[in-house]
Each structure stands twice: as C-alpha cells, then as structure tokens.
Length: 251
Image 1 (cartoon, one colour):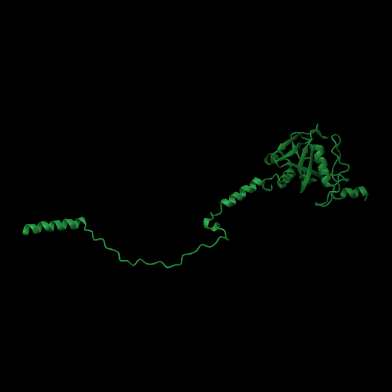
Image 2: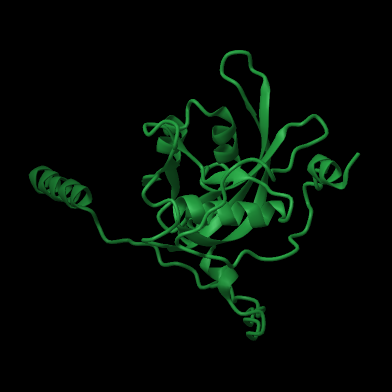
C-alpha cells in the first residue's frame, strides 16, 4: 500500500483538533476536483461543510447548487489530504458562500445517500459557524446565489437533502436546541415570580429590628355595678295615666 493510499484511507476521529487555521481568503482561487479528497476504508468520500448562522436575526445562509440552480444546499466540499476537516469546512464556506466566520462546534457526521438505490455516497462533517462577515466578492460569486432562510424555510428548501435537514435539526437555529436569549430568561424569571404566593408584609420585617414589647400587665376588671336604666317607658306612663283617671272616677 502506497503512502498516498494510506493517507486517503485515514478518517480522523470526530474530535480531532484543528492543526492550522484557514487564512487564505482569496477572492479568485478555489480548489476543484476530487483527486485529493480524503476517503475512508470503504472508499467513501469525506466532505466538510458549515451551517453559517446569523443568530441575532435567527437565520441561516444557504447557497444554490451548481448542478441544480433551484436547489439550496450548505457550503461544503471535499476534505483534502493536506488539511483538517475544520480547515476544509472553513475554506469551502468562504469559496462557495463568501462567508468569514468562526466555527463554534461540530454537529456530527451525516450520511448522504443516492436518491434511488440509497447507496452511501459520502460522509458529511458538518460544523456550526458564527458569521463574522459576508463578503461581496468571493471565488464562486458568479456560479452561485446566496439567500437567507429561517429554520422552517431552510427545512423546506432542503427537503431533497435529508442529511442537511438532520444537521439543521442539530443546530442552534432549531428552537428546541437554541440557548435562551436574555429576554427569554427574563420572562421565565417573571413567570416564576408570578407563580409564587404573595409574601405577607410582616415577614418582611428585618430580623435585626427590636422585638415588640408585649403588655403582660393584668387588666383590671371593672367591678363597679352597672346602674339599671329605670327611666319609665311610654307604656308605663300610659298605664299610670289610666290608673290616675280610674282613681279620679271612683273617688
């Protein structure tokens, strides 16, 4: 087995560290052809690409396919023998989409299969990229179109490429996986506060405040006899008036 064949058979582990950063942001040159592409032991082509995200506006940038102008794909390409998968993903994202950015994490390795017989065609090493700059001029500017998509729009636009949809589902653009924004976190805290019972005012008294003095002196019972109300009622007065009238008659 030749050295070249050995190199083409090696697939670095998923968490392999990047050996060097991509800095060749040339506006004219781009690599083409599969002669130097890395393949695995089964001769399956290894591809590297990025999901370029604008998280501030919750969108992803997709590019048109060179084979089908109506199809939208991720910027990606062959991972070559003289570069790491991260380097290849960054390079392809620049060449095909004109994006300068920072890789934040690897989303996984996704299988691409043929449409009819479902034969394994390639392994795609997909990374999530935070966009730093969208350049106006880039190597494949005249060959591709670029467009922004929301998460749902991107799933519809890539419905013929299941591996892209699977990668999108793992990305931070997916609302289920996205980290909460500061506003979301604040609203969650508000909900938590509103769901708690109201605190009684007495419980807010400082623990260092002096205790209130309880009056323990016995209360003196009022033993003075109550004076009965002997004022005659109107009924009594009427009765007495009748008695006087009777006395005057019989006397």
